Length: 279
Image 1 (cartoon, rainbow, N blue to C red):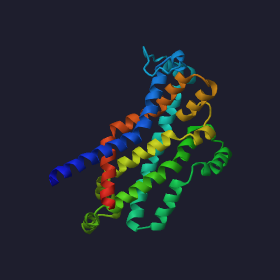
Image 2: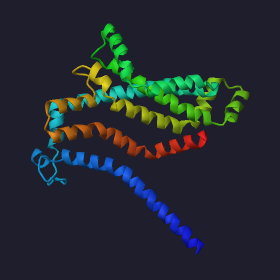
Image 3: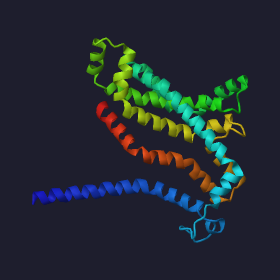
Image 4: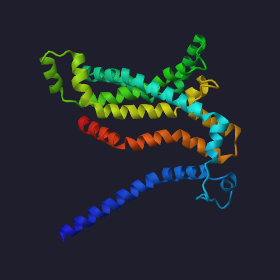
């Protein structure tokens, strides 16, 4: 009797968990599927009432129109250059910085990094704009990459602090006793062990950089716009063309979504490892 009650409670707990997850995920899933539906329908079906959810037949004309009318290929290349560049520089700077802060137990430095992480990017925009205007760099990709470091570096440093703090100190101490320098211990001992954390930091930094809008709308020129800014332009000039607008939004979210799906095992493993070590 007790065993049956335990099984019943366990089954009810799973049902409750699945129902909670479904409740949280279903709004986002519905919005994404509706956006996908809009991108695959013509404007007649998009404006129809009652709404037509399943296109018959589906069309790729909206995607063709987006790339033909708005030079989205150039904007995609710009976003790749900015996001990969900002993420790469953030890793080169942030991973060693996170290691140094963790090993030095610099709590105040960690708090400053956290403050930089939660501070809105708009707070940095005016001084950075004035600086790049004085340097004559407005309209190029270089200021975009530099300003995106405001987003990516704090993320990488903060994530890596947690992972390096959780690494067993005995392994690094053994390497130092054997004659290794602190940099050799970092490179050959700590860095391989922190690979899950580096993966998580890379993905998070890339996503934040890819999705950033405010820096691109102010600092970019006509030829250096990134994809979020390009979507804004579609909204501005084609106010009622829901098909091209949805297609443009999918072009922006597609790479991030694909990256997340491909790297989901690494993300889960990295977050789990960080949680276990942090505890």
